[in-house]
Length: 466
Image (cartoon, rainbow, N blue to C red):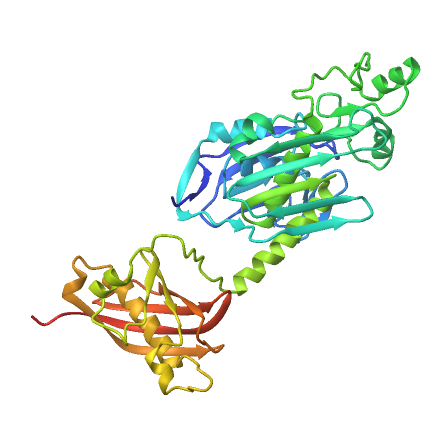
Protein backbone atom coordinates (compact mmCIF):
# COMPACT_ATOMS: atom_id res chain seq x y z
CA UNK A 1 0.00 0.00 0.00
CA UNK A 2 1.38 3.39 -1.04
CA UNK A 3 1.35 5.95 1.78
CA UNK A 4 0.61 9.53 0.79
CA UNK A 5 2.08 12.66 2.35
CA UNK A 6 -0.17 14.65 4.67
CA UNK A 7 -0.60 18.23 5.82
CA UNK A 8 -3.14 19.97 8.04
CA UNK A 9 -6.43 21.09 6.49
CA UNK A 10 -6.52 24.67 7.86
CA UNK A 11 -4.45 27.11 9.91
CA UNK A 12 -4.62 26.86 13.71
CA UNK A 13 -2.94 28.87 16.47
CA UNK A 14 -2.05 28.54 20.12
CA UNK A 15 -0.59 30.98 22.58
CA UNK A 16 1.70 30.58 25.55
CA UNK A 17 4.90 31.57 27.28
CA UNK A 18 8.39 30.73 26.05
CA UNK A 19 10.15 28.52 28.61
CA UNK A 20 13.52 30.26 28.51
CA UNK A 21 12.66 33.81 27.42
CA UNK A 22 9.38 34.20 29.29
CA UNK A 23 8.00 35.97 26.19
CA UNK A 24 4.34 35.64 25.26
CA UNK A 25 4.27 33.81 21.93
CA UNK A 26 1.65 32.92 19.34
CA UNK A 27 2.45 29.91 17.17
CA UNK A 28 0.41 29.17 14.06
CA UNK A 29 0.46 25.93 12.09
CA UNK A 30 -0.42 26.34 8.41
CA UNK A 31 -0.94 23.86 5.55
CA UNK A 32 2.07 23.37 3.25
CA UNK A 33 2.49 21.72 -0.18
CA UNK A 34 3.84 18.22 -0.75
CA UNK A 35 7.62 17.77 -0.26
CA UNK A 36 7.76 21.00 1.78
CA UNK A 37 8.69 19.42 5.10
CA UNK A 38 8.63 21.60 8.22
CA UNK A 39 9.73 25.21 8.30
CA UNK A 40 9.53 27.92 10.98
CA UNK A 41 8.85 31.54 9.99
CA UNK A 42 9.71 34.39 12.39
CA UNK A 43 6.88 36.78 11.53
CA UNK A 44 8.04 39.23 14.24
CA UNK A 45 11.29 39.95 12.38
CA UNK A 46 11.84 42.09 9.31
CA UNK A 47 11.48 40.11 6.11
CA UNK A 48 9.86 37.20 7.98
CA UNK A 49 12.95 34.94 7.73
CA UNK A 50 12.36 31.22 7.41
CA UNK A 51 14.23 28.52 9.31
CA UNK A 52 14.04 25.00 7.90
CA UNK A 53 13.53 22.30 10.52
CA UNK A 54 16.68 20.38 9.57
CA UNK A 55 19.60 19.13 11.64
CA UNK A 56 21.95 21.25 9.55
CA UNK A 57 20.48 24.32 11.29
CA UNK A 58 20.93 23.16 14.91
CA UNK A 59 23.15 25.65 16.78
CA UNK A 60 22.40 25.00 20.46
CA UNK A 61 21.07 22.08 22.52
CA UNK A 62 21.15 23.25 26.15
CA UNK A 63 17.75 22.43 27.70
CA UNK A 64 16.12 22.52 24.28
CA UNK A 65 16.88 22.48 20.56
CA UNK A 66 17.69 25.78 18.84
CA UNK A 67 17.67 26.30 15.07
CA UNK A 68 19.26 29.18 13.16
CA UNK A 69 19.06 30.15 9.48
CA UNK A 70 18.91 33.45 7.60
CA UNK A 71 20.27 35.22 10.72
CA UNK A 72 17.17 34.21 12.68
CA UNK A 73 16.75 31.75 15.54
CA UNK A 74 13.90 29.73 16.98
CA UNK A 75 14.18 27.54 20.06
CA UNK A 76 12.36 24.85 22.06
CA UNK A 77 10.90 23.44 18.86
CA UNK A 78 11.07 19.75 19.73
CA UNK A 79 7.58 19.40 21.26
CA UNK A 80 5.88 21.01 18.27
CA UNK A 81 7.82 18.85 15.81
CA UNK A 82 7.14 15.71 17.86
CA UNK A 83 3.40 16.41 17.67
CA UNK A 84 3.55 16.90 13.89
CA UNK A 85 5.56 13.73 13.31
CA UNK A 86 3.57 11.76 15.86
CA UNK A 87 0.29 12.72 14.19
CA UNK A 88 1.56 11.69 10.77
CA UNK A 89 2.02 15.18 9.30
CA UNK A 90 4.71 15.56 6.62
CA UNK A 91 4.40 19.19 5.56
CA UNK A 92 3.64 22.26 7.67
CA UNK A 93 4.59 25.93 7.85
CA UNK A 94 5.04 27.04 11.48
CA UNK A 95 4.73 30.77 12.03
CA UNK A 96 5.89 32.16 15.36
CA UNK A 97 5.97 35.78 16.55
CA UNK A 98 8.80 35.29 19.01
CA UNK A 99 12.16 33.59 19.53
CA UNK A 100 10.80 30.27 20.80
CA UNK A 101 7.79 28.00 20.73
CA UNK A 102 5.50 28.21 23.78
CA UNK A 103 6.21 25.66 26.50
CA UNK A 104 2.50 25.25 27.46
CA UNK A 105 2.36 22.37 29.98
CA UNK A 106 5.79 21.01 28.99
CA UNK A 107 4.37 18.29 26.75
CA UNK A 108 3.08 18.02 23.17
CA UNK A 109 -0.57 17.59 24.18
CA UNK A 110 -1.79 21.04 23.16
CA UNK A 111 -0.01 20.82 19.80
CA UNK A 112 -1.77 17.50 19.18
CA UNK A 113 -5.10 19.08 20.11
CA UNK A 114 -4.79 21.91 17.56
CA UNK A 115 -3.60 19.51 14.84
CA UNK A 116 -6.74 17.44 15.41
CA UNK A 117 -8.83 20.64 15.37
CA UNK A 118 -7.26 21.69 12.04
CA UNK A 119 -7.91 18.31 10.46
CA UNK A 120 -5.52 16.26 8.34
CA UNK A 121 -5.45 16.29 4.55
CA UNK A 122 -3.87 13.64 2.33
CA UNK A 123 -1.72 14.91 -0.54
CA UNK A 124 -0.93 13.51 -3.98
CA UNK A 125 2.76 12.76 -3.44
CA UNK A 126 4.03 9.51 -1.94
CA UNK A 127 5.53 9.67 1.56
CA UNK A 128 9.30 9.12 1.54
CA UNK A 129 10.89 7.26 4.45
CA UNK A 130 14.46 6.95 5.61
CA UNK A 131 14.66 3.17 5.81
CA UNK A 132 17.26 1.86 8.24
CA UNK A 133 19.14 -0.82 6.29
CA UNK A 134 21.96 -1.52 8.72
CA UNK A 135 22.81 -0.65 12.30
CA UNK A 136 23.73 3.00 12.88
CA UNK A 137 25.20 4.17 16.21
CA UNK A 138 26.19 7.56 17.61
CA UNK A 139 27.84 7.67 21.06
CA UNK A 140 29.02 10.40 23.42
CA UNK A 141 31.77 8.96 25.69
CA UNK A 142 31.66 12.00 28.00
CA UNK A 143 28.00 11.64 28.92
CA UNK A 144 27.57 7.92 28.30
CA UNK A 145 24.71 8.73 25.94
CA UNK A 146 24.06 6.77 22.77
CA UNK A 147 21.44 6.35 20.08
CA UNK A 148 21.22 3.35 17.78
CA UNK A 149 18.98 2.59 14.82
CA UNK A 150 18.43 -0.96 13.64
CA UNK A 151 16.42 -2.30 10.68
CA UNK A 152 12.78 -3.04 11.42
CA UNK A 153 9.57 -2.83 9.44
CA UNK A 154 7.83 -0.09 11.41
CA UNK A 155 8.52 3.02 13.46
CA UNK A 156 9.52 1.97 16.97
CA UNK A 157 11.23 4.04 19.67
CA UNK A 158 12.64 3.06 23.04
CA UNK A 159 14.58 4.99 25.67
CA UNK A 160 16.40 4.13 28.86
CA UNK A 161 17.23 6.95 31.25
CA UNK A 162 19.54 6.63 34.22
CA UNK A 163 20.65 9.24 36.75
CA UNK A 164 23.14 8.11 39.39
CA UNK A 165 22.27 10.98 41.73
CA UNK A 166 18.54 10.34 41.79
CA UNK A 167 16.53 7.66 43.57
CA UNK A 168 13.42 8.67 41.64
CA UNK A 169 15.08 8.36 38.23
CA UNK A 170 17.78 5.78 38.91
CA UNK A 171 16.47 3.84 35.90
CA UNK A 172 13.38 4.28 33.77
CA UNK A 173 12.44 2.68 30.47
CA UNK A 174 9.80 3.57 27.89
CA UNK A 175 8.94 2.39 24.40
CA UNK A 176 6.33 2.56 21.68
CA UNK A 177 6.08 0.08 18.84
CA UNK A 178 4.39 2.50 16.41
CA UNK A 179 3.81 6.22 16.06
CA UNK A 180 0.12 5.31 16.16
CA UNK A 181 0.70 5.12 19.93
CA UNK A 182 2.16 8.63 20.15
CA UNK A 183 -1.00 10.54 21.06
CA UNK A 184 -2.15 8.17 23.80
CA UNK A 185 1.17 7.02 25.25
CA UNK A 186 3.60 9.92 24.79
CA UNK A 187 2.06 13.27 23.79
CA UNK A 188 0.94 14.34 27.29
CA UNK A 189 4.24 13.49 29.03
CA UNK A 190 5.83 16.62 30.47
CA UNK A 191 9.40 17.77 30.64
CA UNK A 192 11.29 17.36 33.91
CA UNK A 193 14.13 19.05 35.72
CA UNK A 194 16.12 18.27 38.86
CA UNK A 195 15.88 20.62 41.80
CA UNK A 196 19.65 21.18 41.83
CA UNK A 197 19.48 22.42 38.21
CA UNK A 198 16.98 25.21 38.86
CA UNK A 199 19.31 27.81 40.37
CA UNK A 200 21.98 27.60 37.59
CA UNK A 201 19.27 27.73 34.92
CA UNK A 202 17.81 30.86 36.44
CA UNK A 203 21.25 32.45 36.82
CA UNK A 204 21.94 31.76 33.11
CA UNK A 205 18.75 33.59 32.11
CA UNK A 206 17.03 30.33 31.21
CA UNK A 207 13.55 29.05 32.21
CA UNK A 208 12.19 32.60 32.68
CA UNK A 209 8.85 31.16 31.62
CA UNK A 210 9.09 28.10 33.84
CA UNK A 211 6.62 27.45 36.63
CA UNK A 212 5.24 24.56 38.59
CA UNK A 213 2.64 23.84 35.90
CA UNK A 214 4.93 23.12 32.94
CA UNK A 215 7.63 20.86 34.36
CA UNK A 216 8.02 17.92 36.69
CA UNK A 217 10.61 18.96 39.29
CA UNK A 218 12.49 15.99 40.70
CA UNK A 219 13.78 16.26 44.27
CA UNK A 220 17.36 15.00 44.31
CA UNK A 221 18.52 16.48 47.63
CA UNK A 222 17.28 16.98 51.15
CA UNK A 223 15.04 20.05 51.53
CA UNK A 224 13.64 21.60 54.71
CA UNK A 225 10.62 23.85 55.13
CA UNK A 226 12.72 26.97 54.82
CA UNK A 227 13.94 25.80 51.40
CA UNK A 228 10.39 24.95 50.34
CA UNK A 229 9.21 28.43 51.32
CA UNK A 230 12.04 29.97 49.27
CA UNK A 231 11.07 27.88 46.25
CA UNK A 232 7.42 28.85 46.63
CA UNK A 233 8.44 32.51 46.55
CA UNK A 234 10.67 31.84 43.54
CA UNK A 235 7.70 30.47 41.58
CA UNK A 236 5.12 32.90 42.99
CA UNK A 237 3.20 30.15 44.78
CA UNK A 238 1.64 30.34 48.28
CA UNK A 239 3.31 27.07 49.17
CA UNK A 240 4.89 23.95 47.71
CA UNK A 241 5.36 20.47 49.07
CA UNK A 242 7.28 17.32 48.33
CA UNK A 243 5.25 14.28 47.37
CA UNK A 244 6.32 10.87 48.56
CA UNK A 245 7.45 9.93 45.06
CA UNK A 246 10.02 12.73 45.12
CA UNK A 247 8.25 15.45 43.07
CA UNK A 248 8.33 19.04 44.23
CA UNK A 249 4.85 20.20 43.44
CA UNK A 250 1.29 18.94 43.21
CA UNK A 251 1.51 17.57 39.68
CA UNK A 252 0.12 14.07 39.38
CA UNK A 253 2.18 11.89 37.05
CA UNK A 254 0.31 10.61 33.99
CA UNK A 255 2.52 7.50 34.04
CA UNK A 256 4.95 6.14 36.59
CA UNK A 257 7.65 6.43 33.90
CA UNK A 258 6.53 9.81 32.56
CA UNK A 259 10.09 11.25 32.48
CA UNK A 260 11.27 8.37 30.27
CA UNK A 261 8.23 8.80 28.03
CA UNK A 262 9.02 12.50 27.73
CA UNK A 263 12.49 11.51 26.52
CA UNK A 264 10.75 9.52 23.78
CA UNK A 265 8.81 12.68 22.90
CA UNK A 266 12.04 14.68 22.66
CA UNK A 267 13.72 12.01 20.53
CA UNK A 268 10.80 11.91 18.09
CA UNK A 269 10.82 15.71 17.86
CA UNK A 270 14.57 16.08 17.47
CA UNK A 271 14.88 13.25 14.93
CA UNK A 272 12.25 14.99 12.82
CA UNK A 273 15.21 17.21 11.91
CA UNK A 274 16.53 14.33 9.77
CA UNK A 275 14.05 15.60 7.16
CA UNK A 276 11.90 12.50 6.69
CA UNK A 277 10.15 9.89 8.83
CA UNK A 278 12.29 6.95 9.94
CA UNK A 279 11.40 3.33 9.31
CA UNK A 280 13.28 1.22 11.83
CA UNK A 281 13.80 0.89 15.59
CA UNK A 282 15.45 3.74 17.51
CA UNK A 283 17.14 2.67 20.76
CA UNK A 284 18.35 5.49 23.01
CA UNK A 285 20.40 5.25 26.21
CA UNK A 286 20.53 8.38 28.38
CA UNK A 287 19.31 10.57 25.51
CA UNK A 288 19.34 14.36 25.46
CA UNK A 289 19.03 17.12 22.89
CA UNK A 290 22.77 17.06 22.13
CA UNK A 291 22.99 13.36 21.25
CA UNK A 292 19.59 13.57 19.51
CA UNK A 293 20.89 16.35 17.26
CA UNK A 294 24.12 14.45 16.56
CA UNK A 295 22.10 11.42 15.50
CA UNK A 296 19.79 13.54 13.34
CA UNK A 297 22.89 14.95 11.62
CA UNK A 298 24.19 11.41 11.04
CA UNK A 299 20.84 10.52 9.47
CA UNK A 300 21.00 13.62 7.24
CA UNK A 301 24.49 12.62 6.10
CA UNK A 302 23.30 9.11 5.22
CA UNK A 303 20.25 10.50 3.41
CA UNK A 304 22.49 12.72 1.26
CA UNK A 305 24.83 9.78 0.57
CA UNK A 306 21.90 7.65 -0.59
CA UNK A 307 20.56 10.45 -2.78
CA UNK A 308 23.88 10.50 -4.61
CA UNK A 309 23.87 6.71 -4.93
CA UNK A 310 21.25 4.71 -6.80
CA UNK A 311 20.15 1.87 -4.54
CA UNK A 312 19.78 -1.59 -5.97
CA UNK A 313 16.20 -2.91 -5.93
CA UNK A 314 15.36 -5.40 -3.20
CA UNK A 315 15.51 -8.98 -4.51
CA UNK A 316 14.03 -11.91 -2.61
CA UNK A 317 14.69 -15.11 -4.62
CA UNK A 318 11.99 -16.87 -2.59
CA UNK A 319 9.25 -14.43 -3.61
CA UNK A 320 6.79 -15.28 -6.36
CA UNK A 321 7.79 -13.36 -9.53
CA UNK A 322 5.41 -10.97 -11.24
CA UNK A 323 6.17 -12.79 -14.53
CA UNK A 324 8.06 -16.06 -14.87
CA UNK A 325 9.84 -17.10 -18.08
CA UNK A 326 6.67 -18.46 -19.68
CA UNK A 327 4.77 -15.23 -19.04
CA UNK A 328 7.72 -13.23 -20.39
CA UNK A 329 7.53 -15.22 -23.66
CA UNK A 330 3.96 -13.92 -23.98
CA UNK A 331 5.30 -10.34 -24.03
CA UNK A 332 8.48 -10.72 -26.10
CA UNK A 333 9.09 -12.30 -29.49
CA UNK A 334 12.65 -13.28 -28.41
CA UNK A 335 13.60 -16.90 -27.79
CA UNK A 336 16.76 -18.64 -26.49
CA UNK A 337 19.59 -18.02 -26.88
CA UNK A 338 18.51 -14.41 -27.34
CA UNK A 339 15.90 -14.20 -24.58
CA UNK A 340 17.95 -12.46 -21.88
CA UNK A 341 15.39 -12.07 -19.07
CA UNK A 342 14.65 -14.83 -16.54
CA UNK A 343 11.87 -13.18 -14.52
CA UNK A 344 10.19 -9.89 -13.63
CA UNK A 345 10.10 -9.27 -9.87
CA UNK A 346 8.42 -5.88 -9.72
CA UNK A 347 6.17 -3.93 -12.07
CA UNK A 348 4.66 -0.52 -11.31
CA UNK A 349 3.07 2.08 -13.54
CA UNK A 350 6.41 3.70 -14.39
CA UNK A 351 9.05 1.21 -13.24
CA UNK A 352 9.99 -2.42 -13.77
CA UNK A 353 12.62 -4.70 -12.24
CA UNK A 354 13.89 -7.81 -13.98
CA UNK A 355 16.46 -10.51 -13.26
CA UNK A 356 19.05 -12.24 -15.44
CA UNK A 357 21.08 -15.12 -14.00
CA UNK A 358 24.43 -15.35 -15.79
CA UNK A 359 25.83 -18.89 -16.10
CA UNK A 360 28.76 -20.45 -17.91
CA UNK A 361 26.24 -22.25 -20.15
CA UNK A 362 25.42 -19.03 -22.04
CA UNK A 363 25.99 -19.51 -25.77
CA UNK A 364 27.94 -16.28 -26.08
CA UNK A 365 30.69 -17.46 -23.71
CA UNK A 366 31.83 -19.95 -26.37
CA UNK A 367 33.37 -17.16 -28.41
CA UNK A 368 33.46 -14.09 -26.14
CA UNK A 369 36.64 -14.19 -24.03
CA UNK A 370 36.30 -17.99 -23.49
CA UNK A 371 39.41 -18.13 -21.30
CA UNK A 372 38.17 -15.25 -19.12
CA UNK A 373 34.39 -15.18 -19.64
CA UNK A 374 32.79 -11.72 -19.50
CA UNK A 375 29.20 -11.00 -20.48
CA UNK A 376 29.24 -8.71 -23.55
CA UNK A 377 28.17 -5.18 -22.73
CA UNK A 378 25.92 -5.07 -25.79
CA UNK A 379 23.96 -8.02 -24.39
CA UNK A 380 23.55 -6.26 -21.05
CA UNK A 381 22.05 -3.39 -23.02
CA UNK A 382 19.85 -5.83 -24.94
CA UNK A 383 18.62 -7.36 -21.66
CA UNK A 384 17.75 -3.88 -20.40
CA UNK A 385 15.94 -3.17 -23.65
CA UNK A 386 13.92 -6.39 -23.38
CA UNK A 387 12.83 -5.53 -19.83
CA UNK A 388 12.02 -1.99 -20.95
CA UNK A 389 9.92 -3.52 -23.73
CA UNK A 390 7.86 -5.42 -21.14
CA UNK A 391 7.32 -2.16 -19.19
CA UNK A 392 6.10 -0.39 -22.33
CA UNK A 393 3.88 -3.28 -23.45
CA UNK A 394 2.32 -3.50 -20.00
CA UNK A 395 0.69 -0.13 -20.81
CA UNK A 396 -1.42 -1.55 -23.66
CA UNK A 397 -4.55 -3.71 -23.43
CA UNK A 398 -3.32 -6.74 -25.39
CA UNK A 399 0.51 -6.89 -25.42
CA UNK A 400 0.59 -9.85 -27.83
CA UNK A 401 -0.66 -7.56 -30.60
CA UNK A 402 2.30 -5.17 -30.23
CA UNK A 403 6.09 -5.06 -30.32
CA UNK A 404 8.60 -2.44 -29.19
CA UNK A 405 11.39 -1.22 -31.44
CA UNK A 406 14.18 0.87 -30.02
CA UNK A 407 14.82 4.14 -31.85
CA UNK A 408 17.72 5.46 -29.83
CA UNK A 409 20.11 4.42 -27.07
CA UNK A 410 22.14 7.13 -25.28
CA UNK A 411 24.64 7.60 -22.46
CA UNK A 412 25.57 3.94 -22.15
CA UNK A 413 28.16 3.33 -19.44
CA UNK A 414 29.74 0.05 -18.34
CA UNK A 415 31.14 0.25 -14.82
CA UNK A 416 32.12 -3.30 -13.90
CA UNK A 417 32.55 -6.70 -15.55
CA UNK A 418 29.70 -9.21 -15.38
CA UNK A 419 30.89 -12.81 -15.15
CA UNK A 420 29.37 -16.29 -14.76
CA UNK A 421 27.71 -16.68 -11.37
CA UNK A 422 26.48 -13.09 -11.28
CA UNK A 423 22.80 -12.23 -10.95
CA UNK A 424 22.01 -8.97 -12.72
CA UNK A 425 19.09 -6.90 -11.43
CA UNK A 426 17.80 -4.49 -14.07
CA UNK A 427 15.67 -1.48 -13.18
CA UNK A 428 13.96 0.50 -15.94
CA UNK A 429 11.96 3.65 -15.23
CA UNK A 430 9.98 5.98 -17.45
CA UNK A 431 11.61 9.39 -17.89
CA UNK A 432 8.55 10.89 -19.63
CA UNK A 433 4.97 9.91 -20.33
CA UNK A 434 4.38 7.78 -23.43
CA UNK A 435 3.46 10.15 -26.26
CA UNK A 436 2.39 8.98 -29.73
CA UNK A 437 3.59 5.51 -28.89
CA UNK A 438 7.11 6.67 -27.97
CA UNK A 439 8.56 5.91 -24.55
CA UNK A 440 11.75 7.28 -22.95
CA UNK A 441 13.35 5.22 -20.20
CA UNK A 442 16.42 5.14 -17.99
CA UNK A 443 17.93 1.73 -17.29
CA UNK A 444 20.31 0.68 -14.52
CA UNK A 445 21.89 -2.75 -14.03
CA UNK A 446 23.14 -3.98 -10.64
CA UNK A 447 25.14 -6.92 -9.40
CA UNK A 448 24.64 -6.87 -5.65
CA UNK A 449 24.72 -3.21 -4.60
CA UNK A 450 27.08 -2.23 -7.44
CA UNK A 451 25.96 -0.55 -10.65
CA UNK A 452 27.47 -2.46 -13.58
CA UNK A 453 25.78 -0.67 -16.51
CA UNK A 454 23.33 2.13 -17.26
CA UNK A 455 21.83 3.93 -20.20
CA UNK A 456 18.83 5.77 -21.68
CA UNK A 457 16.42 4.26 -24.19
CA UNK A 458 13.81 5.54 -26.63
CA UNK A 459 11.32 2.92 -27.84
CA UNK A 460 8.41 2.93 -30.29
CA UNK A 461 5.31 0.80 -29.74
CA UNK A 462 4.17 -0.73 -33.04
CA UNK A 463 1.23 -2.96 -33.80
CA UNK A 464 2.21 -6.34 -35.26
CA UNK A 465 1.36 -7.07 -38.85
CA UNK A 466 -1.43 -9.60 -39.21
